[in-house]
Image (cartoon, rainbow, N blue to C red; front, side, top):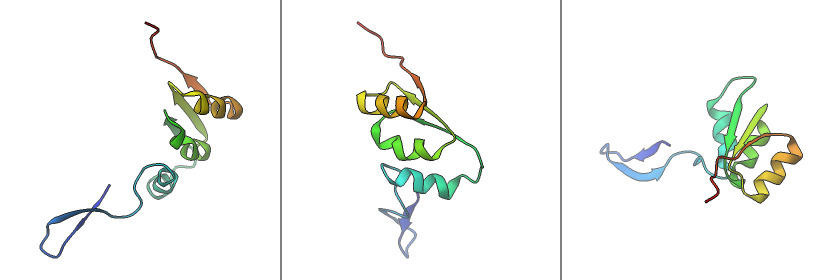
Length: 84
């Protein structure tokens, strides 16, 4: 993420542009990626919009909501959690 710089060249701590979280992820992807096909990897429900815009989606250790969305969309699901 780019940060604002004041007239003295000091970082203000304010973000420039759209933060890459939640609904901002697909916006940033469109700004940064010019490929016709790309893989998106997500691990939480806020990643769903980004996963939906990719041609190849892969979810890692999904919770119930993300797993349901992945199954509905036939995305690859990998679960690496260990049962203890």
